[in-house]
Image (cartoon, rainbow, N blue to C red; front, side, top):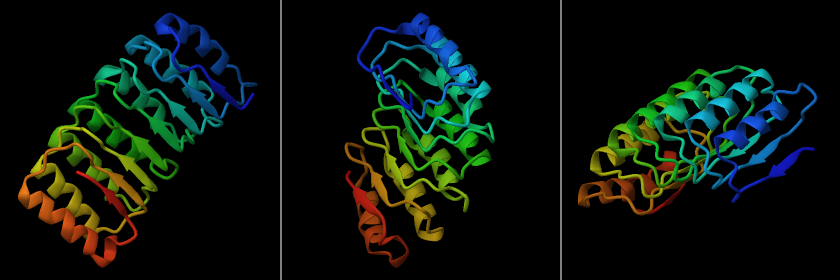
Length: 210
C-alpha cells in the first residue's frame, strides 16, 4: 500500500488513533494519506504526528484539509515537520482554523527542516498579516524549496502583502506559484503586486489574486 484515500468520512479523533497504529508499523510504506473532511481535532492530530514521528521517512503527501486542527493541532504536526527524517513534500491544511500562532509554528518547523517541502496549501485560515510575516521568514531561507504556496482568503492586508513582496524581491526563491485570491490589499499593496510581477527576479513566479 502506497496511497490511501479516506476523505469525507467520520473518522474523528478515535478513528485517527486506530489508523495511527498502522502508521507506526515499521512495515507501513504509505506515501500518500488523504484525510480531508474527517472531523479530526487536536487529539487526532496528536496521534497522527506521534505515529509519523516513529515512522516518518516514507510519507510524501498529507491531505488534512477541512479538519479542526486549530493552532494546538498544528503544534503537534510541527513536531513531525521538525524531524530530520520527515520527507513530506505536500501538506494540505485548507480550512483548518489555524491562526497566527499556528502559522508561526509551521514556519519555525519548516525553517529547521526546509529542504523537502514543495507545496503548502494553507488557504481559508486566519493567518493575518502577522502569520504571513512568519511565512515570509521561511521563504527567506535559501534551503526552502517550496514551489507552490496557497494563501487564498487568509485575511491578509497591506502589511502582509508588503512583507511577501519584500522577501520575494530581495531573495529570489524556489517559489513558482503564489495564490493570494480573496484577501484585502489596499491600493498600495495592489501596486506592489504589479511591480512584483514585473521584477526580473520574480518573473518565474505565477502570482494569482488578490
